[in-house]
Length: 312
Image (cartoon, rainbow, N blue to C red):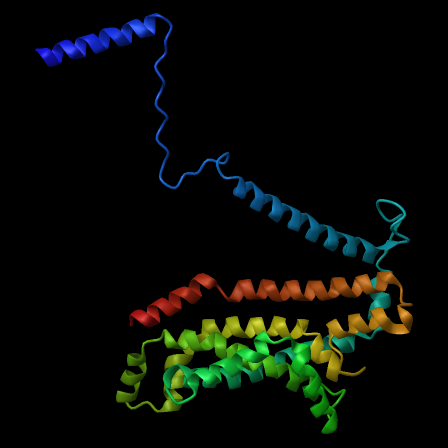
């Protein structure tokens, strides 16, 4: 009874308070797990503002270069008074871009093939074998990737010129292999480590040799990783300026080096629109490689392949 009286008095007091103009505070609705209030997280707005500023700046640069490559007498008005494609044909003929693009593609493909042929077996040995100094070897492979290319590019160029290989395509290929092979090794080693060694043991028990195990058992599992490493090496080689510039010449320049030489030739006397046209060609080439990478290398497939190999 006493408890009921207390409840009744509390109810009456609440009713009186409400009748006299007092309003009981409403409880706040429960927030779903993981839900965040935008007003309570200014860092979110800061991140989005930074991303928006970066995208605006990047798009502004790209649009300016593209418009400049098609315009005549620009920068006096908001848009060029005349539009033309003569700058592209002029740049193609003036700088012999047919030969330059051919050298670029040939060097890039050769570096990719050699890097894969050398790097994948080396990565397999590092993943499956234990030997003294293994950690030191891994550190040595990291050096060409972490160090600025110019630091080891000058000694490499000195060696190439000493052996009479300077200004040749062979020299361009050899110097680009120095960072590319370690890149493939470091990319493929953890990928191979995720593959269950029992698969190889089962194949050997069935009579398969080392070559058959590698080509028929491991190769299908390694295809996604090899494609990913190959495309990354391809993009890296096409964009490598320092090493290529130090050993290349008029007949062995890649596209990125040809753009630099066009900018600095005759004290920068070349028309600005010609350089912009070459930059658009270079950017289009890189974007095409990115599209190919996203088309043939699916990150989800890569993770699934690793998971399946590990579970087996």
